[in-house]
Amino acid sequence: MDISLYRSEIQNLIADIRDRKLTSPEEVIHHCNRLEVYGREQNDSGLIGFAAFSRAEVYFGLNDMSNFYNDIIACMAPMEEVQEWGYLAVANNMLGIMSYTRGDSPIAVDYYTKAIRICKQYHLPDIEWKVHMNLGNLYSNVQAGREAIQHLREGLSYINLHTDSPTYVLDLAAACVGMGKAYIVLGDYESAMQYYNRLERECLPYLMEVGKLPVYAFGAMLFNRRGQEEECQRCIQEMMHIIRHQEFPIMEFIDEVYDFLQVLLEKKEYQRYREVAPMIMELASKTEVRNMQRRLLTLEIEYCREIGDMENYKEKSAQFYELSRLQEQENNLMISSMITMRLNFYDLVDEHLETLHQSAQFQKKSETDPLTGMYNRLKINEFGEEAFRRAIANKVGIGVEILDIDFFKEYNDNYGHQAGDTCIQFIADSILSLRKHAGVFCARYGGDEFVVIYEGRSAQEVFALAKELKATIVGAKYEHKYSRSKSGIVTISQGIFWHVPQEGQTMWNYLHEADNLLYKVKRTSRNSIMLGQDFDVEETEAIHEAGDSIENDTKQMTAVANPVDELPSPIEP
Image 1 (cartoon, rainbow, N blue to C red):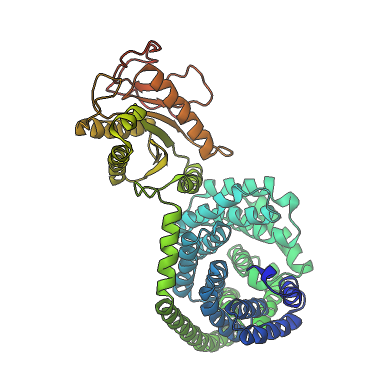
Image 2: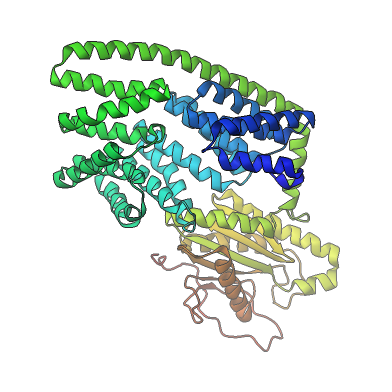
């Protein structure tokens, strides 16, 4: 939201709302009310949406669910009208958190999924990774370990690429704890231990006391499962110290303290359980979140049963029933609010369908080459960053190819520019045929140059696809009488660089290497392919398939390698 568009009084009001949401909630709500009145007077949807969203954030922090839902619904329509997609993504993420906290995981998944969809559509990675983290933790807590790891890995990949973030250590700790707990769900304690070791190395020395709470709760659970009693007791002692002496937001750490209390019961540490359980129950009772109280009450019931206190067992069971009844009423309110919000969305979509269509058309034009319909250089950069992030996260290879049309200047000079455009369209269509294979991205780089990105394939597989493209173009026998090769048809030369990306490497590095390989292969022959696998090696042993010799070219050089039809086994990354 660009506040510079408003007069100084409104700018100051917005800045005050942003800066004081956590410290002065009552004043912020008052400011939001003033801002909304002004927004309605000016018919300014941006201000109306911002006021409602900011109030919702305050109520979210105060655990005032009724007002939170009312304002979060109220902010949706105006925010979409002014296309503030980041606010909409965060709003859905907050709804997901509260739905999960209140015990309705399916509705929470629905909100998280919608938030991720918005983030992907409008390129909001700084918000998307947080939603993936929340969704991953949800899956982990419902014992769906594989799904949890899939989402948590998305979050961890983003964090690993943003070590300069002021919240890096906290974010890394949350991701490592989440991944570790997901592996515990799968029974893979060795993998979980790797994440605990990373927490000890990279996070614990830099965390404040409260920030250590999730780490030690995870450690207590892990070491208990692994039968490492000494380490488990150390984590339990640290947890006891934090709970006794530190104030912490129960809403933020409910999963951690619940896991810790479970460990105490599993180990029959009844004295310690009896000491800290009442403190945690008291914190939970202040939130008025019934599901949180109900979860903790299940542990109280289990505790009473284990020590044989049947009188308290019956009393706690009656409390559990009453909380369940109240929670059902709350869930009905939440579902009603969700339906209202969705209906608002449907009305708004109808109302602004043409606007969205025009925006989509503009987006398509900005990233598409008008002659060929292929993606352009702008989209190469955007897609390349995403492809590299995936390859680094999954530790798989990626191939980047640059190709151009052999002797295209001669073609253009003799046949004319209109025919040259038709030739470029023919090559583009041939390249686009590769998209029938999964993980292949194609774009026009400029002039008669094109780029192809191959994801998740070995060097041998990439080379095979490049040969398929070459065969498609040669097989068409597209006439080029003025080519200086002997074939008399349109051909291409292809330079490809393949490697398993590492942290710090970029799409530009791979394009640069591919361009060097294209230059090398064209010095020896045309209608040729060269694939390299090592950075900055002048005389690299490349995979090379030579093509047509060049007539009247005194600079022709000996091929780097002999033509091959069968490739050697791919080099292990």
